[in-house]
Image (cartoon, rainbow, N blue to C red; front, side):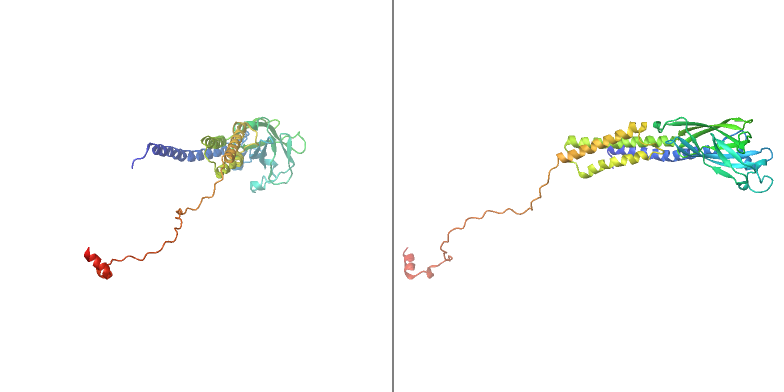
Length: 349
């Protein structure tokens, strides 16, 4: 069987698409998993590593507070980053430092405060290991640049004994920046041993998977809107009849495009630069295409007449002739059947 050239080109295009899917799907999945694991394995820490202390349970050389946590949520609309922090007393400030109890049962032997960007977290005496979810404001960045937006925030952290600020407390801190759809770079620097202060900086960027998926959505919306407009113009110029299902498909896109736009991971409210470059114009094109299809249907609509039932044509009937006298049927007569005078006449002839 010989395939036409057009069929061969279709098979080649289908093979290329399938090959790309077979390669891109597993590769993108592995890269995304690798990036998430790398973020979890590379926390930002102070010169004293709190994770190592918790792992080894060595309290012989460090006395102070251990603070470990992670970035739990990012709200670019309200310009806030939410942290989840846990506090462990270590060494002489732990009420159970000399016992064999496990770390989750540690208690503070005095009142302490951990201050984050000027907001204190109260840690009461004899309280078990505590946790808090403070929020820190974003200083720089704009959602208008989605999905290529970048944000930056900075804040000071410190620990003190009691209610005043005159008794600083040593602390060791570790932060993990692993949030879905984000790439977070955290740095804890300028730790001052005298005042027990640390300066924390964070840089937030969209992950490469978010950027890739967002661009795919934009391309798909442009393809759908242009195809719908091309269909409407083609039907109009060729004078083809528009069927109601065609109008329904075009009108349905007006409701499908907003849902498709909001499917982008972490998309801000409508109005960003990517919306101006895509979504808004896509809605305009689909609306124009739907209007053209409706006008085409109304202008070129013709009501179909009911079809007549097919029947055999009736032949015209001939007019009735006047009644004529009926003649008796003719029979073959012989000479014997004739009268005698008639028979003689025949013989004489």
